[in-house]
Amino acid sequence: MEITAIESVPVEIPLAEPVSFSNRTLTARDHAITFVRTADGREGVGYSLGYEGAHLISRAVESLLEPMLVGEDPRDTERLWREMYDGTVQIGRSGLLLRAISTVDIALWDLKAKIAEQPLYKLLGGHADAVPAYASGGYYRDDKGHEGLREEMRRYVDEGHDVVKMKVGRRSPEAEADRVAAVREEIGDKRTLLLDANGAWSSATEAVRNCRAFEPYDPYFIEEPVMIDSTEAMTAVNDAISYPVATGELEGPRYDFERLYSDGAATILQPDATVCGGITEWLKIAHYAAALDVPIAPHYNWNLHASLVGSIENALWVEYFYRDMDVKVFDDIVEAPLRPDDDGTISLPDEPGHGIRLDENAIERFRYER
Image (spheres, rainbow, N blue to C red):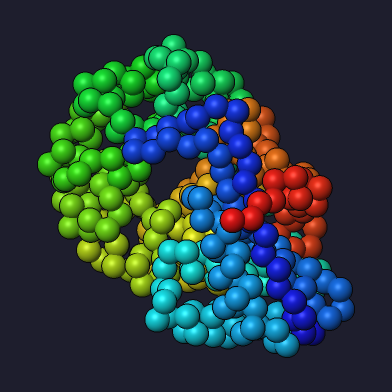
């Protein structure tokens, strides 16, 4: 069993209209897609969201990582992860280069499960055959007022979700509190409401002021109230409000998550396997958290994270975005994307590998070079 080639392709999928969260407006979504191929004709697939840097991630895969792995056994995921990480540590450790490692590692695990003829979640432990999913949305659009926000959340409830998430932080504290109040009224008192600020507030004082204004509406958590590197400010917010801080979608390997939790900056951890170093590292983070009874709620990428959540005991939910909301669009290149059932759960794929089969024609249609 030997790796013969690694190819990485950047794609960019346009949005029908611009969409905003607290501190950014997007018109497209780009991803780096990595293929690891073996001498006997097998192929594994991995990917990561690029945030306008997918072409750089793909170049890093082919120029830095492929030479390390050609000729290696793809089943040796622990050893190969360490070789990729240590081999690029002077210029990597997080960010773009760790996303490149993530795409390769995910592809290796896809291959490993295919070789074992096992669905990925079974190979990793098989804790559940279906996992709960929350509906994520509540983004800002120029023509979207309170009624539009209510309609969106009503749709999620009608789809069977008991947990929904909305964006906060782009407007004044009073305006944001009104938005949160409208959503709470729409979904009722018995459903779970999650908030996501994407690092909107510049200080702990500002974040605490905003987050306390949301307390009457019983949010389950606030995600990224301040920028992720402001660990002391994040800790201050987590200590000051009556509901927990959740974070981790942009964090790197296990060392970052250990620091977040031990410093008291987060009560709920949100590792993203396409960001933190792949499945190998995601599992280390999740198992570390399990030893402390800390819940895991991974960010985005439900087609992959559903299988990972289905393999551990301390996960809360998978984050799911409906395609017609035109926020996350990767499903445009997935042949059979996962979708929640009527009860808001996602049934896990039972084919060997992680089950994410990509549409080659769609990849070519959205492929770009810079």
